[in-house]
Amino acid sequence: MSTSKKLILDANILLRGVFGVRVRQLLEAYQEAVDFYTPETCVAEALRHIPRIAKHKSLDPAESEKELHRLIRLFIGVVDESLYGQLEEWAHLRIAARDVDDWPVVAASLLINAPIWTEDRDFFGSGIATWTTDRIEIYLRDV
Image (cartoon, rainbow, N blue to C red):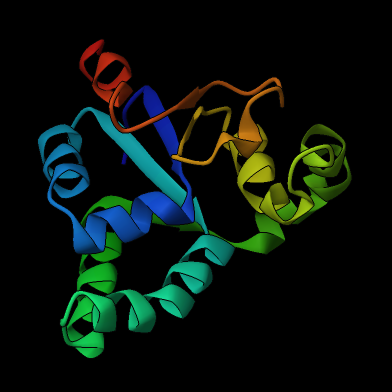
């Protein structure tokens, strides 16, 4: 990964990549122009939700987990907490009014200096640019 554009993916985007079509299409289309990252906690969160969502959609949870790992292997760099953990206090200050559990996403964004791709409104007001899937291509295609 060596592009100038970067994005931090929230857990809900990872899940949309596994169970939907649009996120996967965007990752494939822009993989050469944008570096995609997610904190390791988002991977863990997605893995916790996959069995329930897969069952609801009558899909095999094991195959859905494989799809998540495939997306990560092909398109998404996982940021280890040892790298963004030093920014925990600062991230807490930015997200505390909404959902302090989202601090790793904020910290990874601060570390990498990248906006957040999410469907979660908890990041609004944190001082970090956020993009939702219905608008993300505006950011992606401006390379």
